[in-house]
Structure formats: structure tokens, C-alpha cells
Length: 137
Image 1 (cartoon, rainbow, N blue to C red):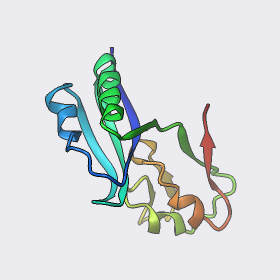
Image 2: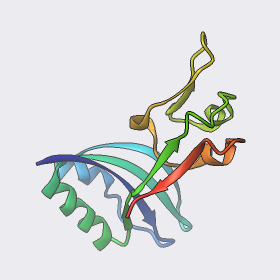
Image 3: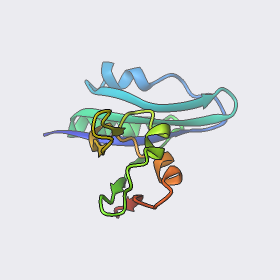
Image 4: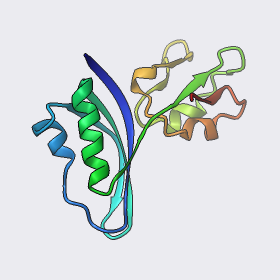
């Protein structure tokens, strides 16, 4: 069965061998890098969207963990409360992935969850609390 999952990879301070390309080569997965901040000797993080056969995704994540990278399946989502929103656009200024956009004609805000990488920058920028975080268990 095919599926798509957003994951957070947390890299340790010590070097790890390059492996993300192996997600495609060895496991037949398609991936999109949504966010990456990795510094050699300091570690870092990367947010990916992986698509492919469910079994291959599971194998790729085990492979990453065996190579010293912590893996977390994203279990958070951004919620936009249309009743509270005043369409000020503050959230759009920090949304690099264009999940939150203002229509240039109507000045109405819209939210595209498919573009959202759950970086949470919009939740900090929203002055009314209309953009918040849902956490799923």
C-alpha cells in the first residue's frame, strides 16, 4: 500500500554517512525536503515528505535510525480558525512554503495544508491566535 508521511530527522553532532538519497535509490521512495538546517559537527534537523510503499518507508526509517539519526513522524498540524482570523497577513510573512497566502484581489487569507511543513512560525506571528497547533497522539 502506498502512503505519504512527513518526518523529522534529527542529526547528531558526530558525522553520519550521507543516506537521504538512498531513500530513493535503495527504497524506491520519492521525497521532498521541506526544511533543513544541518551543520557538520553540530548536528541539525531536516523535515521530509516521503512517498512510496508503506513497507519501504518503514525500512528506510529503520535504516536512518541505525545510522544514528533520530526519526519522528510528524504528529502535529496547523489549525486555522476562520472565525478569529482578521486577515492581517502577519502569518504569510513567515510562511516560506506558501501554506498561508493572501488573495491579492480580495485580501482574504487561505490555508493550503498540503504545503504546510508544521514549522510553527505562523503560530508565533499571528496576533489573534487564529493560527494554532493541533497535536495528535
